[in-house]
Image 1 (cartoon, rainbow, N blue to C red):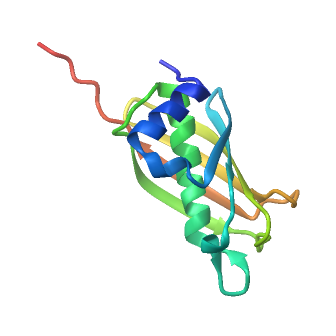
Image 2: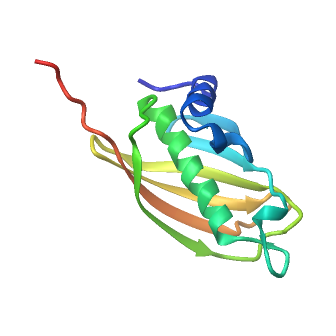
Length: 141
């Protein structure tokens, strides 16, 4: 059963309180989510650019939010794989936007992609693909 943006926000605040400290859910729709990452000095690496781990955190959260929006509030859905391609240097003084699209939603695995943008750039700064494992539904006998 799909979940609304507000349902997901409440779930994350209760189950994963730190997850929305630097992130904001902009939109949750059919097999997709848009997130905003509020960049701060702790997200920067030498040279004034945004660190790779920050971009991976945004991608992982965007994919999780899209999955929660599609299949419902599944606390035990877990990341099984993530790959990132860094395409260009993000602006260190601008927030990041992550746009997730779920490519395949199966019974056990969900595959998706996230395009990451500096909010001041039209071209993406990174492309992430990932897979999540969905816990099996157990029937009570």
